[in-house]
Length: 498
Image 1 (cartoon, rainbow, N blue to C red):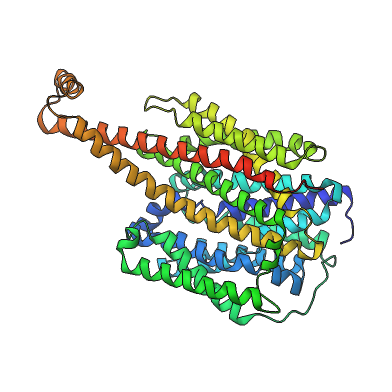
Image 2: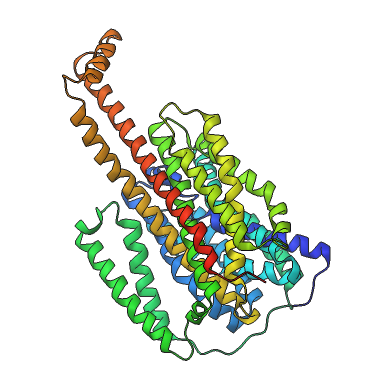
């Protein structure tokens, strides 16, 4: 690719960062708006979850195709086509008049946006000199990490103050801006292409197992997981078809997904480390607002304000981290950042129901110290040694793995949070017998406040539930801390990045 002038490189990098942020934002922005959308369209809240599920399934199917598409048609062309589809689908989502139509447009939005983030990352790397790769990856990292945090906050604010359609319509001007910039600076400067035959069998198997797996993860919690015959069937289909797809891809001459990348030790271990670390991080940014909003009385906006220092700290530190990456072993930075995250999770495991905003925000600052650098360093490790021709495939495959693990982490976090709450609640109730001193003291205090009979029982139940959810939250944060600390040692099985 022909080098760009400094000014053109800056504006192009800004546009690519905006595209990444916009696409990642759409993974979470609609979550808090579901009740509003359901009420406006006259459907049940359970049915409205397909607004999320349809997007994630379609997106999960299209991301692995990134490498093949970009090798066949060029990185710039595929990115612009993906951006155009996403922008058009966002407009159509904002204009949707009923739920089936909205779901149809969300499928188009998810499928079209699959190559956007890998494409933006590949282009970001290509427009910067080789010795500035850490800068390119740093910009992409910030958007990938800040997007999921900002999504629920922005979605909640729009739903509360504007019409829900604006959670989709805000993408349109951003998409037009990015498209105009990329077409202006990179059109006619595309990567070489090859006429690759399409692996139709591999593509078909991929669509089946990814669709079945994503549906299982998205609907499993509401269906009580394997108590549901539908979930059992979907899980079996996903497992069997995945094995068939794996065998086919490893033996086909022109696979739709280049699994040979996993022969590289750095790519294999780096991808595992990045996916698991991001999965835990994603579970953390899902769990904290959930606990704050359902048990601590926080609004979506204030829950976002708790998470905001993490994103701000990552942005502040990113220029220093990218400069540090040029001279310091990426494994050392990865270990330090993962231990910083583990430390933040340990601090969150010490919360009580009386925790205040400033205590919450300070821990978010600690989390921000590790958040940006863990993603950047692990991405640097896994891309080390990947030939330029395979770079789009490597980025697409690592992004796909990250999305799969994130979806699994989100489902497991919410499921285990509820199950641990039920476990702790049963133990608290067993201990809180009428003869127990704490129980008697609490009932006496309620009587002093004028609460008797049923009102006192309801207040007692609320307190028990609140404490049970706190203990469940603490359990999960201890698990997050242990897993993240273990990953700090895993990175040393890779070779030092050049």
